[in-house]
Length: 197
Ligand SMILES: [Zn+2]
Figure 1: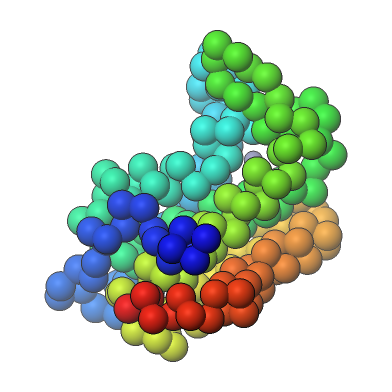
Figure 2 (figure 1 turned 90 degrees about the vertical axis):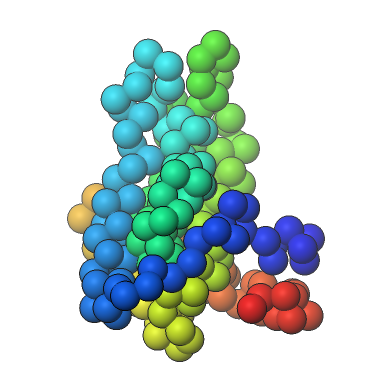
């Protein structure tokens, strides 16, 4: 478990981009965070293959694809993308898990996960926040990277939760998962710190 939380799949290649200014890094981080807030709902464009709230897009997979295809983009924008996905998935947790609110398997099954949609969204949101935090510090050293990831998580949770979901509960759940992404690994896997850098 410790090793599981300690690793970021494919992300070993994700490093700082030489010559990019701190302002550019922060700008790219913020831009990708806001863009990826909407990426999970791209399943609307692929309704022949995917149901809305598809397990394919409502997971860390879009960020992992971005890591795989875009690792040259550098650590800051990839970490930003992870924050955006984490906030979207956290806010989706508030829907009742019936009909369109559930997470759905793609063709040829197109079956909903039912109550398993809750742990699916929660675990993927938590992982996305944890990976964002671990990747951003490769571009912006601590404490600035950490502060940027946490601050953007809070601001996007409040704005997206309020504007898109119109629900204070969405904001509270997102902030709780963000807090857990900091507190959980630190408390449970204190030893894991040795592997972090
Ligand atoms: Zn969604």
